[in-house]
Length: 378
Image 1 (cartoon, one colour):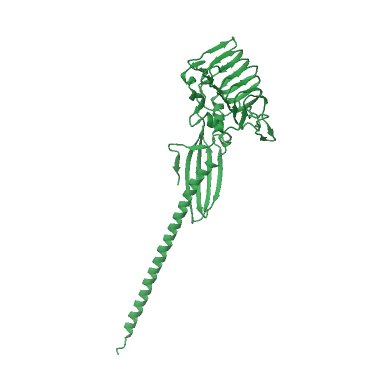
Image 2: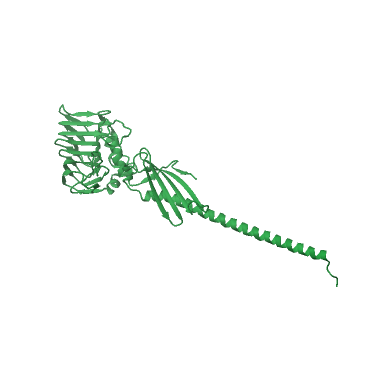
């Protein structure tokens, strides 16, 4: 038998150590690769989850929308909402922009907040209120005969009611009528002003002017009414009703909001009801604001003040003293014997700012702007 020399034993030791090192490197490399793969997969999961959370925030802010936002948030005001869901948190910052627009920024965070094992994603979206687009041709628009007598003022020169939010104003006609109808003034105290004072246009004879409002219509607007009344009702003394600082929704006694602006603000100043009458109605004394939809004839019999939009399927009539309507009146006069008759001491004053405010309040929820309304911030 040949005996191994000392040098041969040294080579074997070196080879064994080298093999151990190589195996160690391979194992370490495998562990490193596996760890990196795990971290990359975990990061991908967190990034995907953060993306989904940011998208969730934009959907939740629409689902949780309150119509009070439409009027309570003024330009520059912000509203913050935080939602804690499984796997993370989403924060939405809503900013009111001029007009019917809102800018929403939704940030989703997945994983430990502030740690390395977390991910964030931020989306921004431009929302626009789904506001009814009513074609107001004048302070009063009608497709029936219009007779004005007594101390009546109809003014299409745009004004902003005292204390109400301002806007870009644009004058309209005092009275807009169909080419097939006539305007008859009786008496020297009648004042019709506007640009022009009386506008004869086929649009006043088009039923779409009275019943179609862009993405909504008379029926859909009536379906969202806060207050509904039967036909033939006579209401007297319509006034704001509040318990402490809380405005009370009430049909009888009638609370139609408060068109007056005071300091400090009244409890019902931000209440803009949609009022639907299932036929004819007569009111006398009181005040209100909002959108008034009348399926039949409407009569204001004295000392009644209303700010907003009035749409009647039948006739619109006033009598007595102290009637004032600020905003616009549309009298469809769907029956051939329906006429608009303004008598007594009555004022109809056009106001685009009042219309914009009450119509914004009637929008149920916002919609994403169609073009360039979404951005991936990071």
